[in-house]
View 1 (cartoon, rainbow, N blue to C red):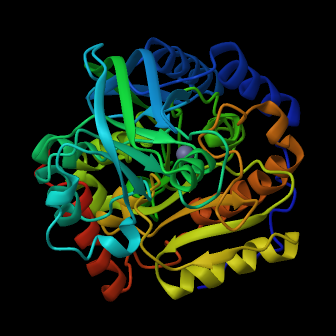
View 2: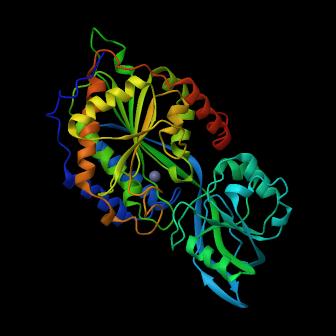
Length: 449
Ligand SMILES: [Zn+2]
C-alpha cells in the first residue's frame, strides 16, 4: 500500500508562539535539567501539565538514576614549573575526589590508535590525558580501569573546542567495572599541555554522584475502535524526545526543541481522528545514555513487541543553519514512505542506516520496532554548541522547527488513519544483529535493571 504525500496538506497547524513558550520555560526559566535533579523534575511536571492540557491521558513512570551533583571542581596543570588552573567538567557516573586534591604525573593516551596496546600498565597512578571521550567497548573500558589511573582527563576530539564539554561514562560500564574520577577538558587546553610538556596534574572535586530518580512522561492518545478494524486501536505509534540536559547546558536545542515539538504535536494530534494509538513520551536521563527510554522499553517489552509499530524520535533539530539527518532503523519501504511524504514539502533527509546508540529511538529498535531519530546537524562534527553552556535560545529557530513538525504530524497522521499499517514492524536482519550487540555491550542487555 502507498501513502499519498499530497493528501492532508490542510494539517498545517504548528504554532511558533507555542514552541517559543515551551522553549522559554524549559531552557530559560528552568534551565539546566540534569537527570535526577529537582530541575529535571520541574521540567517533567511542566510537560505532564501541558500534555494534560492537550487532552491526552498522562502517566509518569519513575526509574532510578545517579544524579551528578558537583559543588566544586579544580584542575591544575604544572607547566614550566608553574601550577595553572584550567576548566573541567566531571563526567556523570564517575566519582569525585571527596574534596581532596589528587596529584599525578601526566601521560597522554592516543586512544583511537593506542587502545590496541595490550599492556596499559604505564597508565597506573597517572593523570591520563585521554584522546576521545566515548569508549564504545566494554573490553577497552575494562582494561583502562584495570590499569588504575589516578584520574582521566578526557578530550573531545570531534571538534577542537576551547571549552570543556559536559559528558558521561556509560552507567552500565561504571556499575559493572568501576570508575576513577573522570573530567572533560577543552581540546585546545590539552593541545597546550602537550606542546608545553606538562609534567603533572592536580584534580579536586567536591561532590560527585548520588542516588536519585528520573522520570518518563507519557501521553496517550488512544485509537478509536471501529467495527471493521477492532485490532488497529492497539497498534502503537510513538513520538519521543528527552527533557534532561548535560551539566551546565540549558539545552535549548538538546533537547528543549523536541519537548516543545512533541507538546505541540500532542495538542494538534489530539484533535485528529485516528485508528491506532499514539504515545508521546518525554524521556528522562537520555544524556546518561538513554537510561529513560531503555527503562521504558524494558518494562513494556511484551506489549511493545506485540503492538509497537513505529517510533519517531526527535533530538536537537532546531539549528537555523544546518541539514536534516535521519538515523534510520527500519525496512526500505518505510524509507520510501518517508520520502513520499516529506519531499513534496521540500523537506529532505540524509538517511543514516546505521546503529547509533546515542538517542532514544535505539531501545525501541532493540525491541524490533522500526525507529528513527531526527537530528539537525550544523557541522560535520554534529552541532558546534553541543553539550555546552551556549546551547541557548539564540541557537534555535522556531520557524525551522515548525516546518519539520508539520511534516512529522502529516506523516503520523497518514500512519494512524490507514486501515492497515503500511509497513511491517521489522528491521533488516544484519542491522538488527548489530543493534543487539550494542544493546548487550553498552546497555547490559535486557536483564539489566
Ligand atoms: Zn539529546
